[in-house]
Image (cartoon, rainbow, N blue to C red):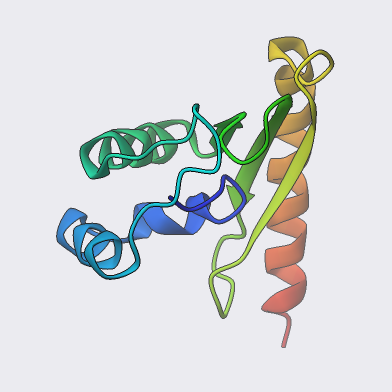
Length: 115
């Protein structure tokens, strides 16, 4: 299972490609909260496509939540993220952080694509 900071790049992939990657690489589950089933992963990727960012709910490390977003039009798949303890990185935090992540991702994209 790709971590949240990597997952924003995966929604660009079609389901068969994701299944192929998982078949070859497996889906490690570092915590009991990790996604370990390809169908669950595909459902999560659908949510990421809809909302525009990924959320890691203690999937990589217990007690840590992460919000991540792809850098649009980057020359290579790139993402930015913010993470912290679940006690502080909550829905109110997300309401503030996600728009800032979006602005930062767009600024990075502009810089990377500057001619």
